[in-house]
Image 1: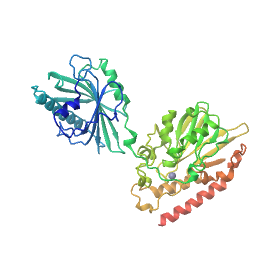
Image 2: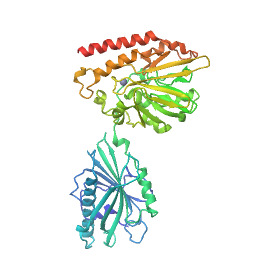
Image 3: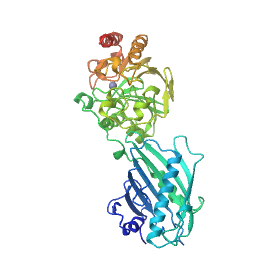
Image 4: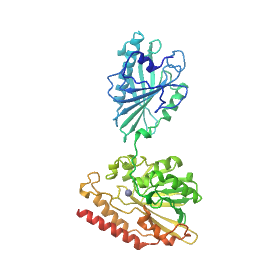
Length: 467
Ligand SMILES: [Zn+2]
């Protein structure tokens, strides 16, 4: 059997890159299918202007007219520097692609075809989830790898955009067979298995951090069903419930194993993590969020105002965008607003919107119980200032000064029994608790410490406003 690209190489189109030795980078299954890769635009269709790479997978029967898998195949076009592609763009792409391919191959094989007959239709596939873009397409072309007879190809084009890496992926499955035919099962498997490659998608550039952030720390029970599972300084909190557990903050990317160990050391199952929350969309609090979500299948919920930064992996943060992508991008399953309630089992947490540090920084207020009493707990995101620039110079966050002012007022009015925060140093964890200390929630009763920390930060804020 002749391979598609091999065929074209015979035609001495020198731009085609044949990389038989390389394994598929984008498409995987099924194993016994052939694999080809070439650069875009393809030499057979110079009218296409997109630059990128195309990978194909096709079965042994691809060029044999009397097989079930004749002209049945899957390919993905990775288009570089593309963040949006319209229905018309895709239709145009398909027409140019197949006109070029059929003309060149027919010419080489001395087959007579009328390339003006080659056309395409494209319409949005119905019944797919709102987050997916899939088109049903047909292309009228010629079976140039066999007898050159007219052929109607049924296709599905799935569009996936990696906004961070500025790449668009067209995942295309095709067969002249009806969609009800068994060959489509294989094709749908390929379509489903494709994911935007992380390695090429985003290079994560986590800034260098201090030892205090990365150092392990012995987990402990803070109060009732609330536990400290973070690193020496990065506050991560586990709240256990009858229906699984809530994890607030995940530290740096490398904190994952420490958090998992800490949860297991306390006698809980990592896989029981059902809800993931954060106090702010910075790499030192959501670094391991995407990986933990993937490993546990938990729902990630975040303040709506941090959504953009989370989805871009920090690349759209008003200040930390200077590092590019600083954590693995993650899309929240639920967006939260001020005073929203997060419920799991017998627990209810209230989100308090405390913007400034990030647009969607927030704190959590909830009550835990032990056998003696209940404790009203505040996990506070302290409004520290991130930027060296004056507030008026921050175009990406025009409301920053007002947001801080709002947050200082709001935070002063909260009542609670004990408080904790995003960083252990902010609430003096290491003065209040030593590894091995017995259970003592009252060690975290500290209204004065909270007020003093807020006053100190407010002074810094007032200086900043005058800057
Ligand atoms: Zn931060």
